[in-house]
Length: 194
Image (cartoon, rainbow, N blue to C red; front, side, top):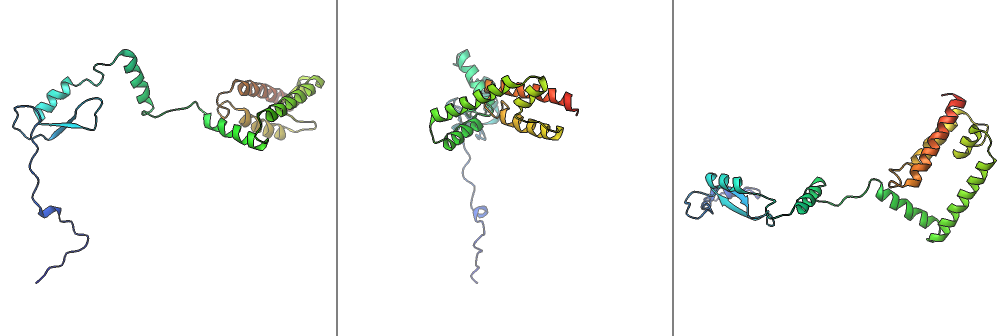
């Protein structure tokens, strides 16, 4: 009777095991069961040793042999990021914001810069007109009276998210703006009560 095999049957169990690998240490006749890298530059190529010789090889193995102190330091720094490039926190968010601003303003660098300068000049002029600390704080948060504390809090959160240094790639101007916003919020919080 002809026995039919399943399509998914594994036939590897009924085949004889291949011959054992010999130890790569010269003069050793034992089986080479344990692998060891050939060199620092060829970590995926291996010597195959018996247990005694792999122990001897591992005792004498020095990954950093032949490297200068600067090369070792560089290697350690690369290993802290799993040998992948890294960027400052918020870098890609800043790049995306820059490209979106450029697209919104007609892809011109000067036009965007001019608009920002006009906005800064307008805000500076409004600040000059402000007299009290409360009025100054309202100008910083870009609010006009009458306001309640809920509106102040919402505007503060909005501006804090917009000018946070992590979102702006550690930009010092954004950091200074956030400090100014925090000070204005604290002033209004004292005036309007929390």
